[in-house]
Amino acid sequence: TQGAQEASASEMLPLLLPLLWAGALAQERRFQLEGPESLTVQEGLCVLVPCRLPTTSSASYPDYGYWFLEGADVPVATNDPHEEVQEETRGRFHLLWDPRRKNCSLSIRDARRRDNAAYFFRLKLKWTKYVYTSSKLSVRVMALTHRPNISIPGTLESGCSRTLTCSVPWACEQGTPPIFSWMSAAPTSLGPRTTQSSVLTITPQPQDHSTNLTCQVTFPGASVTVERTIQLNVSYAPQKVAVSIFQGNSTAFKILQNTSSLPVLEGQALRLLCDADSNPPAHLSWFQGFPALNATPISNTGVLELPQVGSAEEGDFTCRAQHPLGSLQISLSLFVHRKPEGRAGGVLGAVWGAGITALVFLCVCFIFRMKTRRKKAAQPVQNTDDVNPVMVSGSRGHQHQFQTGIVSDHPAEAGPISEDEQELHYAFLRFHKVQLQEPKVTDTEYSEIKIHK
Image 1: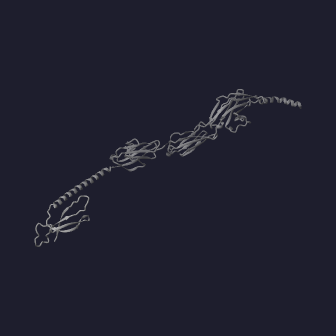
Image 2: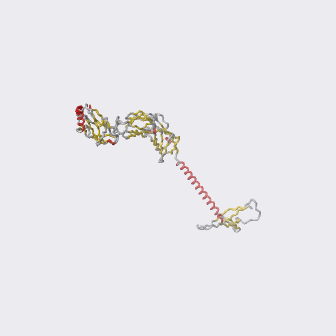
Image 3: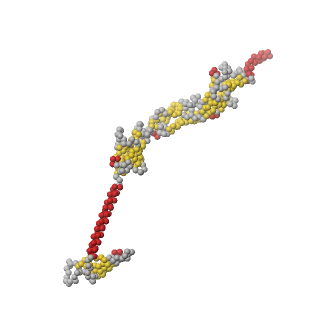
């Protein structure tokens, strides 16, 4: 039995020697990685770290490769099925092992900020005493600056459906598929999608013009989100036409519908400004009356200037908004009336004429009366002996004394006097006026008194 044990030990010795060399007598050799010493990748994207096996490696040996994070004992990626890898890199870091093509590259997917570090590759050759370690390579992970692309085929027209596509062509297909989200106020519906794109069907309306549409893309493997926002440019025919009116220096007022009559003073300046809500802007023009399709405008712009309104401008004016998707127009009627200043002048002249006429009439009456008084004052007063004083109330409540008597050119004769005969008497009146600030003046007046006996 002892001889049998010695024989078996001698047979096992050649098998143990390579293991001893690989362990205690293993020697480390270094080789240089091909390519740059550092690589840059954005969050959520992919990067390939190039690596080429040394020439001493042979496809006949069952070699294993390992990628390590600098300072770590557990690899981030390996082709050794018995070796564990780091939890953080599992499923994202892959060793692209191909001994026949000398390929030992490292693929990094869904790059994260924590992946920012230095890495090296180690090759273990079985049945040999050599371990090959590569030079270090730095990976820099930057913030994601790429943005989605939004493509719109053709022009967006009101009421017409269009297909929009949001794509991320810069994303790697090997990574975790991104999540697409759309945000819009316009009516939409989702269409088919691929790994790098999403389709949206939109049916815009006039009110959707200049509103925002956003495509948001999230990369779940790196927990980063990017988006792009555009403003919708929707073409639509005129929805309404309005006219702003400026009369002289007065403030403007706006007409939103056809107006039967607009009063304007004769000679007044008038400015009509037409405006239409459409996209792209409609061509505006003014016509006098209600124009036909081929009528000639009086203004090829939205502004109509009437510096002095007269009878020739009285009537209808129409503003037409022409657009490739449709046309619209609005009309108003001008009613010209004369200035009120002319009639006021005629009335004032009539008043002045009547006043002057009345004044002349009063002057004539006054002169006639004065002449009449002077004639009466020139007649003599006789037989004042038989004048009887009589007290009569005068004006202003004062009492005035006057005397009456029978005045005759001849002495009274005896004999009967017929009833039809009338005697002419004169009265001498004396008025005593109240003292005023003006000097005292004594007026003497005569009047005829007829007495029937």
